[in-house]
Image (cartoon, rainbow, N blue to C red; front, top):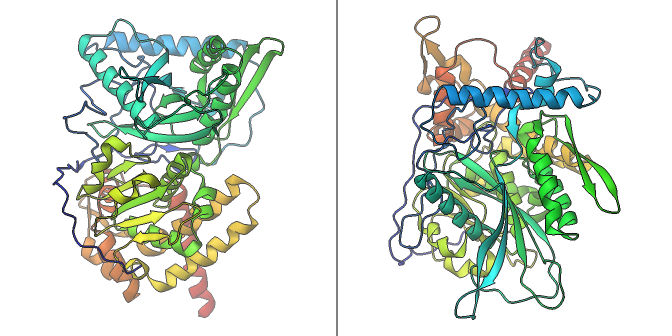
Amino acid sequence: MDRQLSPNSRRSFSFSSFRVKKRSHSHEEAGFPRRRGLRSFSSVRETSRKESVLDDGSTFQMHSGQDQVKKTGALPSGEDDGRQGALKRFSAMWSSFRRGKRDSTKVKEPEPPGPSSLAVNENPRQQRYASGQYFFEYLVVVSLKKTKDGNSYEPQITYQFPKRDGMAKFQKEEEEKTLKAITLFCFPEGINWAPLTEYHSETFSFVLTEIDGSRRNGYCRRLLPGGKGARPPEAYCIISTLACFGLFSKIFDQVEKRRQISMAMIYPFMQKLREASFPAPGHTVEIKSFIPESGTEIIRLTRPLDSWLEHVDFATLFGCLTDNEVLLVFAAAVLERRIIFIADDLGTLSQVIHAVAALLYPFTWQHTFISIVPEILIDVVMAPTPYLLGVQKRLLDLVTDQSDLLVVDLSEDKKKTFIVSIGDEDSILPPKLQSEIIESLSNRKKASTVEELNRVVSEAFLHFFVRTVGHYASYVKRSHAGGQGVFEKRNFYKAIESKATRHFVKKFIQTQMFDLFIQEVEQQQPGPQQGIFHKKILEYQEKKKSDKTRKH
């Protein structure tokens, strides 16, 4: 891991890192703080002039800020942001009325025990459904069509549901830019395609980051369409503000099943899905769908109870890297360094990069985050600001002429895992805490389900943050009740007894992820904190008191 490369001599690349100074604190959901950035739960997308990908020759805007603008009502995506007041209130009432109608005809399933953090006065409907959230904004089919010269293929959208009609000119222009971005991410390889007779379907995800820092998740499944002879693959893509990879993978199973019968079979299923409310953590939504010769099917979609881990598959991460290698990647990420992941498989790239971001919980990666970099945008690797990037292995030569970054090979036939590194990754974390993480990770071999594995892994790294910065609340001082808090940074890290831990924390508190976390704490009103992080802090503090009592 000691390979040092000379600075690159490629053309300069201008890249902006957008920093959000103030953010409203995340709402808690089922006892788990909502992941800022990785998840944007919202029933409406208020349209402002946003851009995801611009045409050739323009700047590609992918800012790092993740300020989630609070949105109200149930105004369908694409409505004019200028329509205020009455229209939004009417839309909210109409959405509530439609949900109420569905409730009256649906047989309610037994309620599992709810998490203790749910308010006792919440009604069953509020507990079972995440208020007014739709599963997705739209579904598109991206097909590879021959270019005019007939020598190559280019991705084009051949199907979209629902259709957007009656939009203003600027709204239409913005949607066209978004759709253009979708085609790039569905086929990041560019034009290098040839007809195929066999193609193993693959599912992956990507993130569209808007100028205001808000994010939308793209879920994509590529497969070979029905027919005879050689033909290029096509991609099905769902755009949603919701982050739940496992759930959308199951939805794709149903879409693929219907596509094999007829394209027309997809529409009624997606219409039913769009009308359904997104379930609350630990609950199930049922979708009835008719299939010729099979009759009416009931598709049950269950959301994991640990909602902050529902977009994560740690199995893929640990299938590609050893425990020690994961620890080195975590060390680089926690200090917000530039990290590039290399793999042939798109699904591997997207799963691993989301898993690494999840290891940082309760903190959130605040910089550039592209799970699969399209070939046309490969120059983003030259950005001087921190990033987490996923790059296909065939583009490896375009990213290894850099220094001051970590390039991680995830492929099965790799000769070495860390193709490029700074060389100090193994000394970033305190040695004692490194050993504790490795010991905790050994318990994952006992996990029999994805949920158990996710919990074992997440708690191993969560405990690291409890040990290093879990005492932060004691150093947020307020001049008067209800006043703005002020974080006493110097006293905070000086209170740490271990020299190695203090050395790490002095670096970590300079990161943007910690800075924004503390800003949120400073703005919060004092009182009991909820969420898994605060629960673990209290457990650790009680254990320390108990151990001290035994010694005396």
